[in-house]
Length: 453
Ligand code: NDP
Image (tube, rainbow, N blue to C red):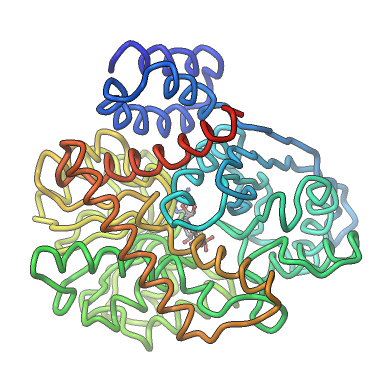
């Protein structure tokens, strides 16, 4: 790294030594910006860089709630309002026991550049809690959500900060959060996205991240004269992003052979067709069961429990053409990346946020694997959230076809932008550089225009 970027990185290491996920996200970003920083007017852009890595605001609060048995519980709530240069803060809420300030900051940092790439008017933010919805009753989840939003409602609003879902926050949670927000404010506004289309949500929002991921990956293959027809694909996770990634891949003639959750993965060599996918949706969204049940329901599939001692992630050991990590951060280590390269993987597109370690990304680049980074590849979800905000502002609901067309247009546009930006700045084929540089320049120029605030 050059002096200016190296000094910045040392600063965040010194200021926040325990925030390893945030450091990882900033490191990847600075590696790309490093390649252009000397060509930009020094004082101007250096002064923006040090502001970009500092959240405009980070809110941490306690969330008291009671179990069905009347036992008092306490969790931690977070909202990091990273950057509002391009619009109201926008980004999801994650409910998972691993959530801490480092994870929320890394997600908010990534979100800022992702939202910039969509071309819509959205700043970057992210939030959540270390609450674990797994094993909780509907009424426990409802009481938790009501308590969480009671505090968060002071800090958000349709023109200020518009949260959405993420891991552990789906349609059920958004409903509970919205209902309580509406009571507190006595107003019906588009302050949360991911709402049901029955009451203010956008069609295609649940599908958007998975569909968008596949649209962007299809554009990458198209550039090489290829398509998904007949391709074998690995997908990890089995939640919102994974489910709609499989659905779109199936519709384009691909065969998906894996899914996973935090307890293990399934391998189904005959493919997870639409009928089996319907089973997965009920299993994960309604009965909230474990993915191991898939191998009991479909005898052609095999279940592999997760190994507790780390090591290789089983999902990435099966032969395939394309891989879509759709579970969580750092699920593709250097070992996993080597396993994928060994089995001749052609394309990796990130549905989850930062699922590949820095070493893993280098291994893909060094071996000519087409690699689409999360901040571009999974931007479809927030893009349709942006379209939901537009629909709410005009009090009109678009048809599913119209939203899907807009989503396809946005994803193709993002791919063309990051491909061309990488080429323009001498990093042809490196979409990580393309996404970071294109995302950075837009946010930085807006901040400069607005007086470096
Ligand atoms: P869901 O909660 O719907 O699903 C998450 C899936 O990942 C589940 O299968 C879950 O398994 C698995 N998972 C979560 N944590 C771990 C872990 N530590 N180890 C192994 N598996 C894990 O979340 P989403 O599908 O919404 O989100 C998945 C990823 O996509 C996240 O990185 C999120 O930030 C990203 N994303 C989501 C968007 C959206 O619109 N929803 C938009 C852009 C990015 P289990 O059920 O066992 O916990």
